[in-house]
Image 1 (cartoon, rainbow over the protein chains, first blue to last red):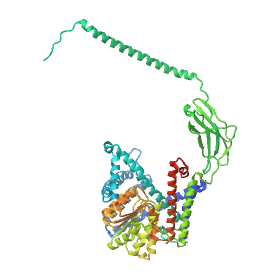
Image 2: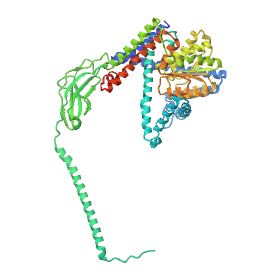
Image 3: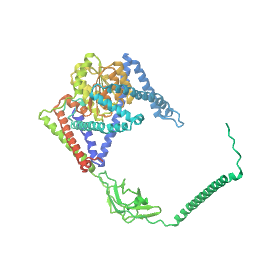
Image 4: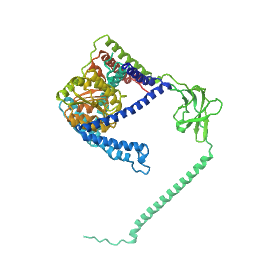
Length: 220
Length: 414
C-alpha cells in the first residue's frame, strides 16, 4: 500500500489535466483547477516546512560553532526582523506592509526597498562580469568549432551595435541570418527533442514505470 | 583705400522706386487675397454643419445570412452569432448591435457590439438548454436597420475540443510507440541506447569527491515539482545519492523550492536506505535555503567558495542564476555536470561545465543510469516518434514549397 497509493495518486494527478486539455466539460475543468489549487495549498505547507528547516539548520550551526556560524546569526536575525514586520504589517500594525497613503514607507516596505532589492540587484549585476569571463573562455579559437563560434559571435555582436551598422550595412543582415537560420534551427531541434523527452518522462511517471523520483525502487 | 561715389540724381532713382512700389503692391495683393480666401473657408465650414443637419440620415444596409449556433468545443453557456455584413460596411463605418430575446417576436435587448469588419459575436453566460433568438442592428449615425431574427439556438456543453484533434492523434501515436517498445523490452529484446558522456561521468564525479574527501553539491534547479525537469533531476539525484551512500561521499542538496525540498529529502533518504547505508543519512544533507532566486544563488555560490566542493551537479530547470552558479563552480575547480532543457541557459552550462546534458538527455538520464529495459524501451519509443516528426517536417517543407498547405494546417494548434 505504501508503494501503490503514491503511484495511484500520481496516475490521477497526471491524467486529469490531460483529459481536461481535450474535454471542455465543466466538471472535468473544475477537477483540474481544484487540483491546481491543492498544489498551492500543499506548497504553502511545504514553505512552512522549509522555514522550520532553515531555523533548525542555522540554530544547530550556531550551537555547534560550525564553519561560517556568524553567517547563520545574520541569516536568523534577518529572518526574524523581516518576519516580525511582515506579520505585524499583516495585522495592520506599523501601517501594513506596503507604502502608507502619504507615500512614506512602512518598516517592511523600507527593508524591502533599501535592503532586499539592492542586494538582489547586486547579485543580478554580477552576471555581467561572469558573462565576460565565460565569453573569454568560450571564444578562444582552439579548434575549428571554437573558431566558428568566435566568428559567429563577433558577427552577431557587431550587428547588434550601432558601430557595426556604421561600418557596413551587412553586419545587421549577417546577424539576422545567423540568429534566424542556423541558431533558430538548432534551438528548435533541441526544443523538439526536449518536448518529446518530457512527454515520454511524463508517460513513464503516469504509468508508474518511472519511480526513481519517489525513491521506491526500480520500474516494474 | 576708400572709394568716393558721386551723388545720384532723383531721376536716376525713379526705376528703383518704381520697382519697390510694384513689390509692395504685389505683397499687399497677396495678403489681402489669402485673407479673403481663409474668411471664405471659415464661412463655408460654418455653413456645412448647418446644411448637414438639414439632411436626413439614410438607413444603413442590414446584415444578411444571420445565424446563431451553439459555440463549438466549449464547456457550455455560450452561443455564437454569425452574419454577413454589407459589401461597403467598412467604407461606411458601420457598427453592429447584437440583440437577444428568449421569444422570437419581441423583447430584444442589446447584449453586445461589433465593429465594421467583424462578422461574429460570442454571447456568454447563457443557460444551457434554453432557446434564444438573435437580431443584429446595423448602425450608421442616427440611422439603424435591423436584420431578421434567427432561429432558436440553445447552448450546451461539449465533450471534445475538436480543434485539438491533431494533438490527440499525436498523443495516441506517441503513447502507442512508447508502450509498444516497453512491451518489447519486457520480452527482453535488447535495446541500444547511445552513449551519453555526461551521465557516464557521474560515477567518476562521485568517485573524485570521495577520493578528495570533499563535498558534492547537487542543485536540483529552482522550480517546483510540477516542472518535469525537476522530476527528471530528482530521478538523477536518487542515483547520485545511492552512489554517495555506497562510497560514503559527502552530499549536500540546497533547495530553492519548498516542494522540491520535501521531495528531494525523501529521494535521498530512500536512496541511502536502498544502498543499505541509512546510518550515513543526515537531515542537513538536504536543506532549504530561501524562495528568492538571487538570495538562493548568493547562498549557494557563497557555500561553494567557502567549502570548495569537489563536484557540482546542476541539473534541472534554471534561469538567470545558471551562469552565476556554474561560473563560480568553475572558478573553484570543481568537476561540474549540468543538465537542463531551458534552451537559453544551455550555452552558459556548455561554457562553464565539464559535461552538459542537453534537453532530451536530461529526461533519458534515469533510464540510462538504471539500464532498466522497460525505461530504455520508452526512450526507443520516443526516438521513433521523433523520426516520424522529422519525416513529417521534411514532407511539410516539400508540400509547402509546392503550395500544398495540408501539413501546416494539420499541425496548427489553437
